[in-house]
Length: 109
Image (cartoon, rainbow, N blue to C red):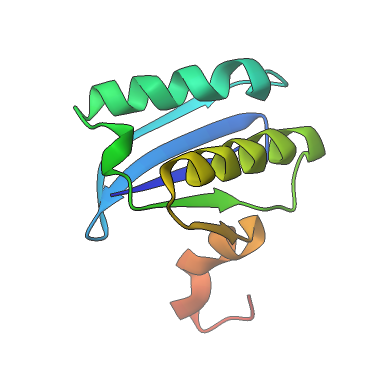
């Protein structure tokens, strides 16, 4: 199971996936409160999906572009969890995530 974290803007998102299927997700307007709201939201997501952090096999985190402080909080949290759980962490460009749905449009992306 993978945990995805996006704190690159004032709208934060978390998702749990398994075998490319979304098990649970949370999106909320956090403004500039990433540091206060991220970890409790991760805990709420784990409870919502009836999963335990020990079942995570990887963490995916947005690496920008975006809000510097939001990215700092998201990346630091992802790295801390990955280190504690001894699982890999992968950073993904926020811009590439935004562009992905449009790749098959035949237009420049």
